[in-house]
Image 1 (spheres, rainbow, N blue to C red):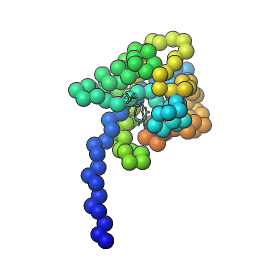
Image 2: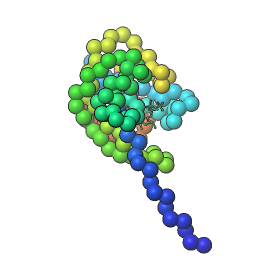
Image 3: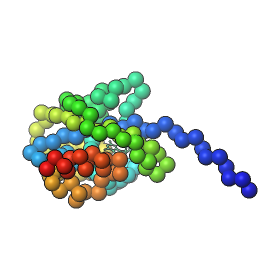
Length: 139
Ligand SMILES: Nc1nc2c([nH]c(=O)n2[C@H]2C[C@H](O)[C@@H](COP(=O)(O)OP(=O)(O)OP(=O)(O)O)O2)c(=O)[nH]1
């Protein structure tokens, strides 16, 4: 029997995430049970919607998800990674915020300021690893 032709691959999922650094630690979020990639650590953010710039999407997601306002400073790293059946195009931006105090998330069961010199202790989502490596080199 002939093999079926490969299905045309879907467009990559456009995702933006914020790298927030304070006191030699980065804001890391663990995806809560019931979400895709539950239990894995990531930077806060989400999907870019139609007619939205990456910066607008990032500001919207952080307001919705964490209830904080951020300034988007610069693109740190962008790469497309295959995750199962999906291509995730993740763009990580250095951001700043004036938010003080504990931060809670609608999408995560843990939100922590994690020391930059111990990033390898967390089980990061695959698309985040290049940015995690960049951050580790800052120390
Ligand atoms: N937010 C975020 N998502 C990431 C990262 N790394 C990574 O692979 N992803 C994946 C997980 C999801 O498949 C996808 C983003 O989905 P999401 O559920 O966080 O985005 P969203 O809030 O816009 O989605 P929705 O619940 O409104 O549908 O990208 C990351 O660092 N941050």
